[in-house]
Length: 148
Image 1: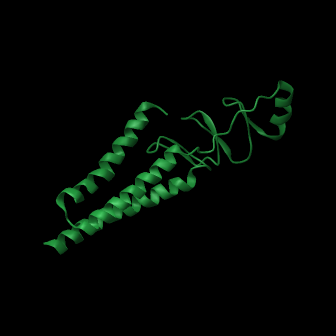
Image 2: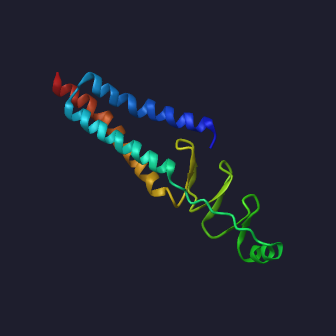
Image 3: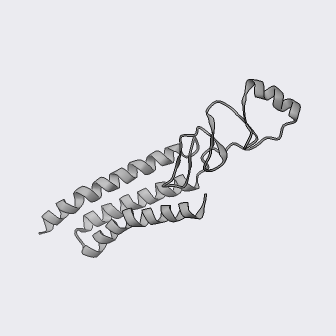
């Protein structure tokens, strides 16, 4: 993962998720809204960290002889770039230049591949992001209306 991807990830978390919670805390719209917002933010950032830190299912290269390679290439797929025997469901990610078991996609927001190892965490990250977005969208006008 390149440095540019890390900056995009950090900036997006700060811009889209931390700023609204800081707004809730500074303006003291409501203590309940602040607590719920902070808990949702922590859940979202925790899921993001799990996705970012989990191994997506990187396939470890196995050294094989040239004869064995010819035998295996007839019955299995072989990735020439990674030098791994690819079973069913293993695909090569061009951006990361590795083979991933259960490859779903390469996520630019997280900066890594989404595969069998971190797919559940990614789904939790997306669900928590949606819940936080809906909370921010609907809680702000409701809490403002109730307090004024």
